Image 1 (cartoon, rainbow, N blue to C red):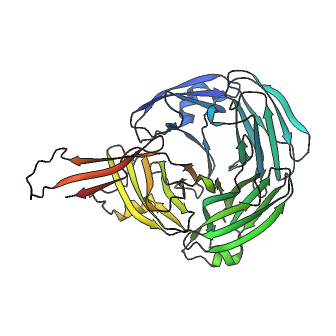
Image 2: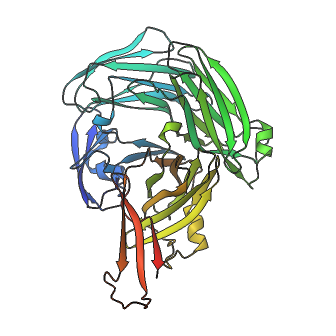
Image 3: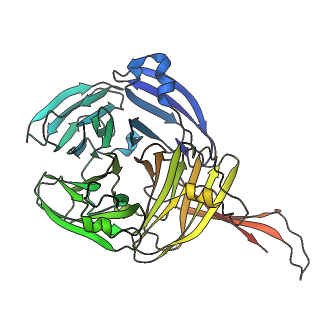
Length: 473
């Protein structure tokens, strides 16, 4: 959980079994600009194994968005993140899930949770069998259903319609195996009206010239009309187009493209792994996009595609304990204009300012927290980032230039190449402020007293606090 407001937030967490039984897990206070991590298995173990599967309920006082939460699920060396959704943020009474499980040791599964206070009737229709209804049943308040589409097809889709209030039915979709988890595409409400999507970081393993490390982009034409999509692979370092392919999609068609030609791997200019961006452009609305990279060792990294219209000028993310995780921030500049960005870390007992850095137009910038610790460069106030950082908060903002950036922070367990991450979907209005230390300076004309001045912005919902401190005379 993360808190993005200037006052502590008291929250209450409950675990719901698959049958809807409620297990209170306690009340927790999340301090301003901080995050709190809980190991759910340890919390539910005393109550019995029937609480090992189910759902979570998080309640707090305050505006939606002032407290955000994620659940990270790990199986073997694979990990995926699931964003906790407020029912008020889920529009409509329909959801669509699509997948491509080819090459993955598992089957697709869709989880449904009734987050409302009354019974909800729903129907699930399969894309593999047009017009057929797989499930037609009722789900009670707090109850969770797991549905595996009965199809041998590696690619497919399902659509769920229900008679509950908007947001009363919340879903998660994934591909599950004995030691494997991978995300699947999922949309609540109506299909996307966006026609351009971006993923900020796609690792391409240059050590495998035979193409065994592959980036896969899965497209789903959710409309009833023919659509045409172009997938472009862009170098994060130079902004140069590395590969591009265009395909036509029939109505309701799921199509996967593998982007790993040998010439792409040999064109890279880093020792081991190149970070590329992938852009998907559609001729018309109704296209849904998901993706993953399959590394040579067999690990799968899921990619989050975002509409280009979600580009923003600031973001804030939790930083997990550095003893257990490697944490990276990736910023993709979607405009041809350069962007100057600053960042600041916060943790219990300290802060550290980073930058400014310039991100050339059309390129990406990757900030490795471990590299910042190792360099031990002091900021303008002489502070450094400690290597034993137990967890904290990272904020960034654009100071000048392009304000169309997409940001994502990814965390990896140190024994795995797989990553899960945190996204910021936009920025909010800013309230500038300034302070001086001491808070009162008395001097005669002609004198030049020394004092410390700090300038920054307060951001509603998403950002609070200093973005940088400047010593001044």
